Image (cartoon, rainbow, N blue to C red; front, side):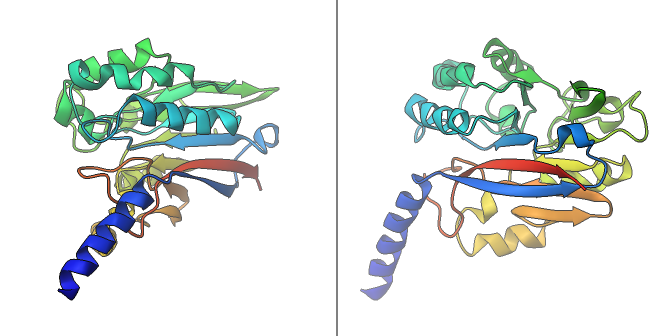
Length: 264
């Protein structure tokens, strides 16, 4: 039966693609990025979806890939797990070995709420050395220049873990460059209203399996993957490293993204 052969072949291909995480290098030119931060390398890590199909060995692979790139800053944008802390907490332990001189920062995704209490997961992340910046920001300095790295909880999270971008950027000088971590790229509407310069996101998996990419694109305010622009805000959406449900990807290769930021 031709349909059966095609289905089996596609599944086998998808399993292979899902297991072949790549490093995706992107250069991003940004008008307000201070010259002191020109060349800043940001690793974007998202959507590991640790659970029955992905465990500690997968996390170790991702950590080794990220560290080999020697990023200046690491941005973790949610959906690290599909199970409870009891079941997969130990599978996240390699994340404690992530290294970046300017810090490792993280925000929650929707699966942190689906799988467990968001606050419990954030406590677990912090125990691994990840600075959680949900609805808050930190100042990063190089020489005489300062930028803000801000973050928000996922759009779908409920109280008390709903996103609050107003709180995240409160007190920021109007002209200061801001990098925002937000799990869903659709957060870009609000980001643009707050003069965010660059938003990094995940969530979409690029649709994960063709032709679901087209359905994901229809629901999005911006590109499903890669670089796009919404008003004056640049948004980068990663394919993510893992897979939700079966470890299968077709036409949506898993990745670790390395963004090199350039001042205009």
